Length: 356
Image (cartoon, rainbow, N blue to C red; front, side):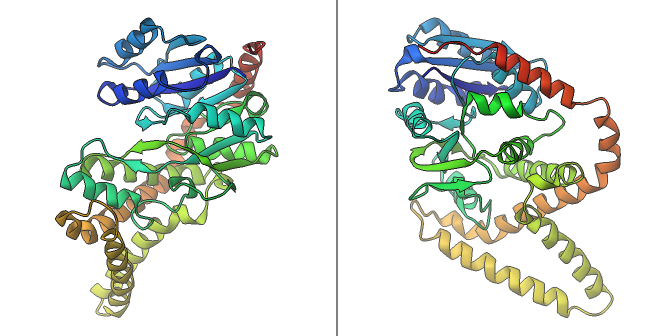
């Protein structure tokens, strides 16, 4: 089966060397792998690294480099989908690392009868300084990041609502189309929601694993959480079905914090004390849990402060997103439409070729 391994990137020159090496070392026959790179108008050496990879000639079926004129992730992913010819299309993030058998294990599970597969995607860090390992601990924690099952390698096959580095049979993409370019951060949630609505299941397999680099400084993590929260708020107004209640837990916490603070200012601090006590209990318990991890560092004592910063950033982002809905929805009239998605389906169908 011909496999299209797709990756998009914007100014990722500092992160790409490891992933490019991983791709070159895949144990699946290289003449059955088409590599599709999309450069989203990078201003650093990202495109040059892609071109060097292509010119080094690792024996792949083809190495395609596509230019996207927008920095929107969904737009870039659609460019990748419309350029791919494989029977199987695999999506890999630029901040990822993949083992030698990543492609072959995805192909194996597709051949076993699945239509969409993926695996565990734990976080790693490229800088093992004490502070970065502390941020990694916060990112790996259920309390600090997400309950998404794909963040941890499963012990057996399980069917989830979403996957991160996923592989799709071509027919799945032809049926549901591409990513919604009106969205940012939540485009994969909505994409996988449409796949589930079309009757397909997303299988998380224990023999598939990949890794995602965590942010290397607190400022970037805060910005990421805020942006994630903002897009959750915006997406609620148009595609609520692709979201879960857990996406709104930080929002609920921030709202309760605001309400309890107002009540406390009026002379009734009890509710604020109760909220602080309950949150503090979870905060300390999860911090203690982080101390049972590998690579424990003295800076872990800052985790009780890092966790609320991340939660508040996410929750504030959701509030901002909800407030921006009226302005954002006005712009949707000239945005990505169903006709655009039908064009993506047509382009994907045209790219179907006989696998070697």
